[in-house]
Amino acid sequence: MEEKKLDINSIIGFVLIFGILLFWMYQNQPTPEELEAQKAKQEHVEAEAVKNEARSAEVREAATLDFQDSTAVANYKSTIGAFGFTAPSEGTTKLENDLIFLEIGNKGGQIVEARMKQFKAYDSVPIYLVKDGNASFSLNFTASDNRVLDTKDLYFEPSLSKNGENQVLSMKAKTSPTQFLEYRYEMKPNDYMVDFTIRSQGLNGVINSSKPVQMQWNLKGIRHNKSVTYENRYTRLTYNHDDGKISKLSEGSDDEETETDIKWLSYRQHFFSSILATKENFESAELSSKNLVEEESPSQGYTKEYTSLVPLNIQGGELSKNMHWYYGPTDALVLDKYDGFDLDDSIPFGWGIFGWINRYIFTPFYAFLSSFLPAGIAIIVMTILVRLAMSPVTYKSYLSQAKMKVLKPEITELGEKYKDNAMKKQQETMKLYSKAGVSPMSGCVPALLQMPIFYALFMFFPTSFALRQKSFLWADDLSSYDAIAHLPFSIPFYGDHVSLFPILASVAIFFYMMMTTGQNMPQQPGMPNMKFIMYLMPFMMLFFFNNYASGLSLYYFISNLITIGIMLVIKNFILDNDKIHAQIQENKKKPKKESKFQRKMREMMEQAEAQKKVGKR
Image (cartoon, rainbow, N blue to C red; front, side, top):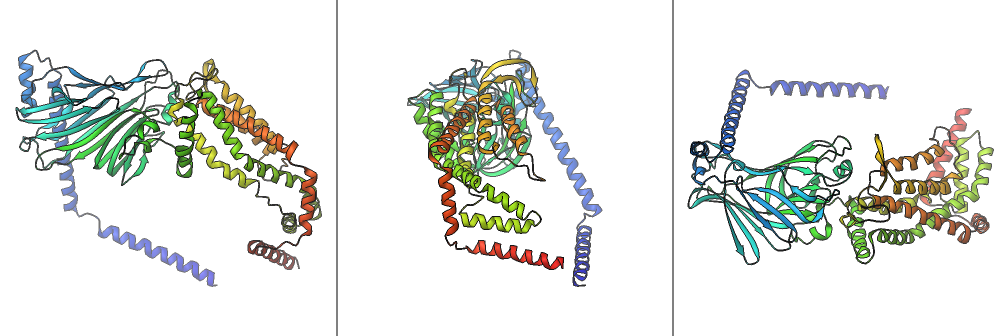
């Protein structure tokens, strides 16, 4: 009766809450006058947007005319207003050091080409981060005469100078000899980072300070790797915000986000990154990422398309913002050199403790080994040392299996004795484990302890710049797949090639599973077929790793071979089943003190057994 009353009260409560919500929605719905005002406001906003787009279109059209034609020049100057003071002139200015080559266009004052000088793509083409219009950078603002202007349509006047050993390029869009909008680039020797400043002088009467200035940065990531789907998996828009928090847009689908207090924006293209950073944080930004890769394709030239819209503040009618461009490798050893920016946080080391192990142990450890060993040998040496370090855990796991194997006849006997009483069977089995000093979970704990190591290594190989284009045996690039044969067709989820290291790794995994689970896999009612899983897992690994970094498959192959060897040594030379059996028998004779948890579990099982007997009566 009490339960029924409780149900009725719950229903009444839900009805009342629903009624209150309906009343609140009714009270807060807009009046007809408010609806009309909202409609008028929306129509005004849309009309203004159409006007602004028309004005921008006029500027773009004028900016593409032949400036040898005096009429066209006059039309261009008339369209852009005060900024027509700068004479339109096609051309570019080059900045370069030993590491990077930049080309800055007069039109827009922006970087139109960014090329790595020490790296090439998988097809021996130089690494371009900006090329053929895949990127744009501009400011969108409203002039005092309500013209909507975009700096990518304006012409800038270049001036190249020196600041010590640094190259300085000043790009000015002038409204008079002393009034201008300036982009200032300063390139240092042997440095991937270029200082970049936006500032205005004397434009407080030219720029409409009541309307926002939007900085827009667009980029389509250029493909650099053999497998575009694999590269795309590690191509993401990453950003540092809210006092050091690192966030990312979606890896595999279109995504957008609005964030505040942003320190840097990274357009990561797997092993190379385009980064815009500032020590004077951006107040906010609208970010978007569009996935351009649907499937593996040799003709796909781009991976993702990024857009960032960042409002800039006008102070005293003028603009001033100090920033830094980084065009270079996504390499922890390089990015870590830029103090105060934490750019190495843009690398996907992994989350939590896994990322910590990858970042502070495996990355520097491999860098040390590869400094005097060939890349493939360094992987093998690192694998051997990791497996040896984990061998005590392997020993514990195998010892637990050996103990369970020794107890199996007694467990089988209990199963037969209490086959009609599952509760009693469980109770007696737990007693046996307790007396013998064996825990059925002890085999799982070592496996769990190894998980951080395995996951950290899983993230290390795809993100380690040190592996890029390093060859070993038949693999010409340990950061990509090691194709030994190309198929005339593509197999879903597998690809159009055959990689050998994943085959070797899958075979090694199969034999490892045979040794650890294949000898004793009873089929339990209602449970998955363990033998089927044993055969399925290596097969799935074969498919999964076919397009992955061959260095990772090499690691799994060597790791499983070493583990099999360690287990054979433990089984044949260290563990003695007779001694284990004798020790278990000794443990049974010793008085066993129950822990609070064990006592509680025993009491609960005894109570359940007693209630079951009462129920039968």
